[in-house]
Amino acid sequence: MYLDSAKKKEIFGTYGQSNSDTGSVESQVALFSYRISHLTEHMRANRKDHSTERALVQLVGKRRALLNYLKRKDIERYRALIKALGLRK
Image 1 (cartoon, helix red, strand yellow):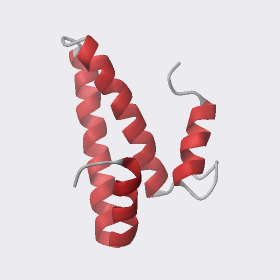
Image 2: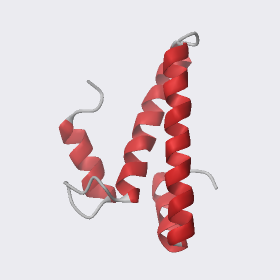
Image 3: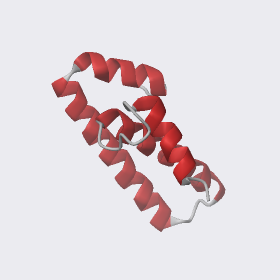
Image 4: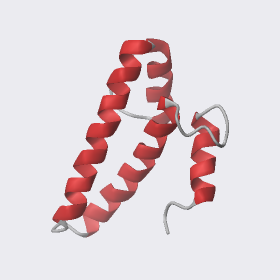
């Protein structure tokens, strides 16, 4: 499996306050970004997989909504997260 509990703890430890910090915006966006990159690779190999394409679009929307929230609340945390994850904008 591409996303096991050890990988999640690593992501949460890197971008959140601790390994069990699953609620912060930064950790959620980092987890979504990891899942989006995995699904993007899957879509390159399987162009006609429409259910995965739909899931990918939904994940991108969720990540965008969280980033918009963070941008409204704390622009410095937003800029640091964008830079750390290497996202555009």
